[in-house]
Every structure is written in structure tokens, then in C-alpha cells.
Image (cartoon, rainbow, N blue to C red; front, side, top):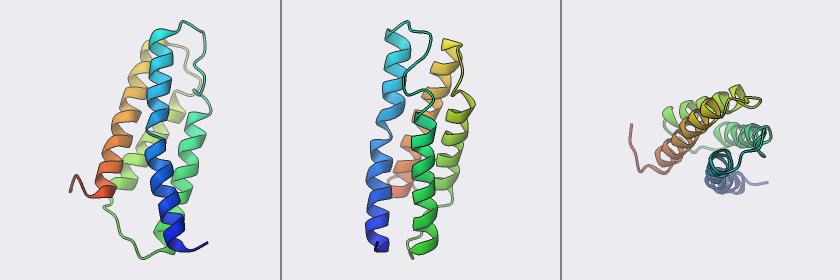
Length: 115
């Protein structure tokens, strides 16, 4: 697999992953089920993109701001921290933070936000 294909997969998958916190939040707010679908699988989906990002970092000459991986890894940590959370308020608050971190991380990677 060429490095640019790997970078494209990481970029497009990362943009797609911004939908996951939105789905979790919609489910948590509008449906009164004890568990939110995707609540435990979503952090794993984020892990996959972190792994792809590490491969891109080490296998390609593409450079990105240090704040991109910081934002993304922080989002993954928060997502894992609430993967089994049953308190709806904590779950919603944490996933709002995850969504914000993902959006900021993507904007940093695209160069829209320069830090």
C-alpha cells in the first residue's frame, strides 16, 4: 500500500468518524434505553484511526501540527473513559467533548486552524 493511499484512508475515515459522536449523542438524548448503541464500539473505531495515523506519521513525509494527534488521542481517551458509563448526563457531556476534539483535530490537520 502506498503511503498516499494510507494517508487518504486515514483522512476520509477520520472525517467519517465525526458522525459517530453525533449518533451517540442523538441516541442518548432522544431514546431512553439503558445503553447507547455504539457506546462501546465507537472508541474502538477511533482507535483504528489513531493506528492509521501513526502509520501515516512514520511511513510518509507528511508533517502535521503536534496538536492534531494531541486532540485526537485525548478524544480517544475520553471515549474509552465513558464506554461503560450509565449516567446519561456524564455520557452526553463526554461525547460532546469527544465531538469537539474530533472537529478541532480534523480542522488542525486540514490547516483550517493553525496552532
